[in-house]
Image (tube, rainbow, N blue to C red; front, side):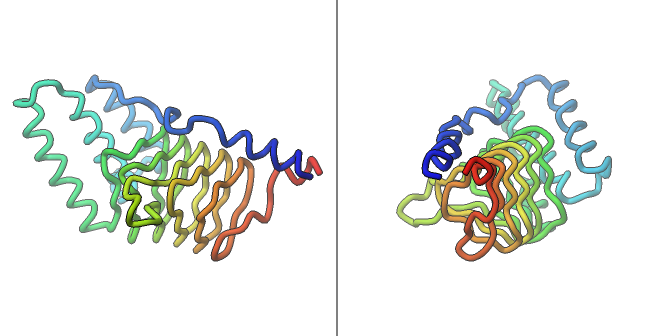
Length: 201
């Protein structure tokens, strides 16, 4: 059983921080990326989640504009749109978040994502989700989510923890620990109730 757990935990050593897609500075690439997000959100451009992701993409893209003179008005536009999304829809998704492809923000309201978070490809987060710091004396610590992570409504993930690929986080769970891939976590504090490693025992 110990060896099985070690196998699962060793897979957490993957450098998730470098797995989020690196931004392309071309405007054409920005449009293509936003189109992909639009498709992922059901081709509904009025969805708050899609708008939040689109604003994030724009915020990342404008940082690639080397001329400060040209970037200044783009930054002003970004801040206006960011505040609009935050204050109207209750979705805080700063441009410093490393966002993978086809990330879906379902519904709206009380969604807070720490600026140092990493969200892998095809991740889903829902209303009431907080991805943030755990200790005030470690303000830069933030969760790192792998690919295809499904975060239930009201879930809270705190601190510098790593969530593996294909993890399901139950609604209202409070996650304070690393979670191996292919697992399900529920409860306060969250506990792992299902893991692929169990099948190796």
